[in-house]
Image 1 (cartoon, rainbow, N blue to C red):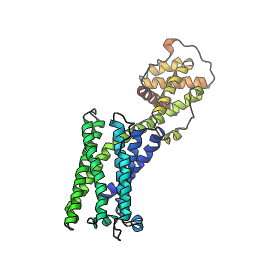
Image 2: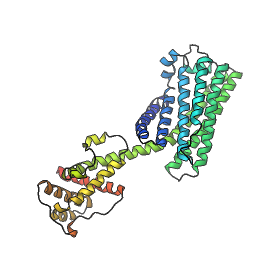
Image 3: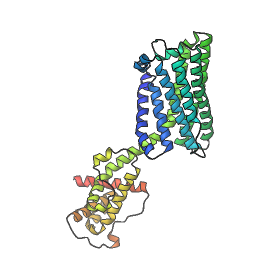
Length: 378
């Protein structure tokens, strides 16, 4: 469980954030930027919970410092969660909200209290610096700020997400909002639970070390984090699925597109890349794959004077439209490459090209390109 929650999951979250952040910053997309930073900061917060980190070099340098890093990362993640919330649901998303000034002020007070008022004895783990001094005034003030910010944020988030859920259409979007609402609700429960532990420990030193109570706390926070993550990663996961789908279409279309680009260089806009270089191109590929599909369509129309009617008639007997057009294109490209003069064709001899939506155009180009590659390989 620890390996999954504090090892693999943080690495995946930080990886997704690093993947999404450059495009979000370049496009000045507030929603994507806030989502990426929220996920990345949450990944850092989870990473600092690793046993090796909690008792590592940072704790040796300043006892308890990993706890401060964990709390500040968690608060940063919450601040960007609210920025994401405002960007999506606020009637005026450009309005400046108080979440960033509030988290900055809270973080500054916590840092001052941590270095000035919190005791720093040598302990086995960073968490012990806080747990063993719950009755200290500096620790109480430090934890009051953290739990106050956490509890208030989770309560507001819970109310907003539950209220906003009703206006979201059924499907993945509503599932994501519902997951965020339930995760924030459990965040409120976790905050109340932790406050009760702190208060109970001040009254009775043995209260905070109850194994059952600690296990329950771990279950609540894990469930809250996973639910919030499930709500957050739906958007980037949908983008990842779309990226993989577009890359697959580019891989299929590229051989035919490349041959058409050789025949009609004026159809190529921008730099030409090899098939393998296309696979390592990051960012949104939606426009790229659509551009390649439309280039194939325009090239098909430009090849009409070079078409061999016999190729079309032969392909018709095969009974597959993609095979028909692949044979038609191969014959026309060969004739143009051989330097044969184009001939004026009758309307009924030209392969018909209907107007299609971009998705249909990509599907058509990928299907024809697949048959084109098969025929070329034979």
